[in-house]
Length: 126
Image 1 (spheres, rainbow, N blue to C red):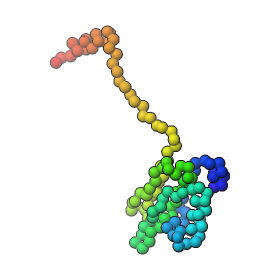
Image 2: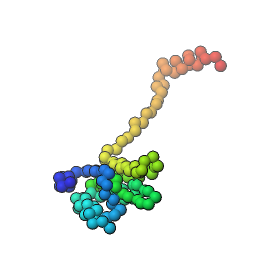
Image 3: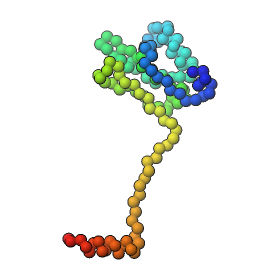
Image 4: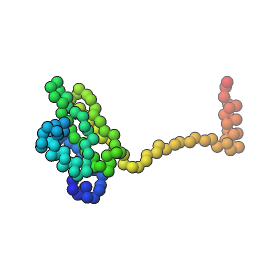
């Protein structure tokens, strides 16, 4: 983390850390972990529970971005009952603009094409 911090490179790290970030106010080791991550310039992008049971809610699926790219992302939680944990995601922008190619169709109105059109029109049985 120090190397990336000093080189000022964009970075994302994520994983199922089995550290419940929702307990950072009540659990000193979780608080220390989060302070360490933030002190290196990383910010968590998932801040709501990623697992909800009838008796508890936890946030153990962590995604962090380096502060330089924290404003150019979309993140969230995919709520589903397929698994015991919800899916989490992060979409980042790499700064490159992707332009969809525009196709412009034109007709060549040359004398030869006009003559060919007239011949094809005459050959039609209306």
